[in-house]
Amino acid sequence: MILTYKIKHEQDFTEELKKAEQVAKYALEHKSLSSKDVKHIGLKSIISNQILRKYSRNKKLKRIKHVNLTIPNQGIKVDKNNREIRIPSLKFSFNYCFPNNFTKVNQIEINSEYVFVSVTVPEEAPMKTDNWIGVDLNTTGHIAVIANPQTGKVKKLGKKAKHVHEKYKHIRKRLQKAGKYRELKKVGDRERRIVKDLNHKISRVIVNIARKAKSGIRLEKLKGIREGTKTRKSFRYSLHSWSFYQLQKMIEYKAKLLGVPVEYVDPYYTSKKCSRCGAIGNRNGKIFECPECGHVDHADVNAAFNIALRTQIDPLQTGM
Image 1 (cartoon, rainbow, N blue to C red):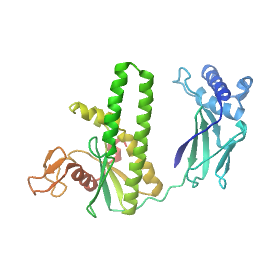
Image 2: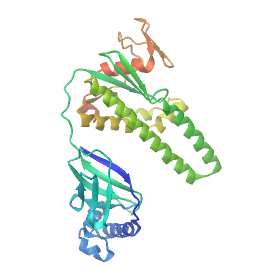
Image 3: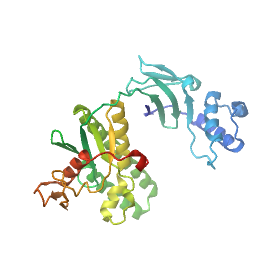
């Protein structure tokens, strides 16, 4: 599996980035693949070659916005003992703190603030199991509710999300009224970082629970959920402001690294069906009641059990 790690640097690459932009503009205009054609710009050929390949072959691109310095594997030296990576062409080295289990560094990209290190890491063999935990993702209350039918155990995660929604919704409203659009962008970036960090933590807990229980993970296939038009305004805000797709992708790659299988199931009626007897029940807010067997439960917990017990969607039918 290929993972990318982001590391902040303190180096001034202003001149190199300007040259990289010039190379990219030349590539876009002349479709050249030879570093000899841009030798006059003064950027190292090992970096120029990468930029030329990227921008000369992109037929849809019309103009250049941001160009990173791209260094291929052959231009990178790794010292695992000292956790140091060197880039001779830029006379630049930095230390890393991400796991040392990677087999190679594929490439590195550098902008004015960060180094993006792409590495290949080994994956564990997929676990064979008949046991599954269900994960119900929500826009209100806890972001994720986990249920294990084998043990009956339930775990709720991400209660902080509601506070994040409300806080940044009000900040955005205030800044929009004041016309402070630069601050608005900064606030949006800050919220995205908080969401990403919380999604990382939630996904890590979910995968660890599944691995400890020797179970796979079942999630609802959420594609198309944002197209619904009959949702409450507050629900629509939460739905769009929280990245459930990002959370699912984090669960997927973390699970793949540890050999934990992930399946997607049809979300139809998971919140209305009784997880005990299968009858259609009544949901009132966060309370679920079954008129057939009398089962009463937290609605999200009931949904999580239904997800765990439901069979996988055929990938060929869903396009996943």
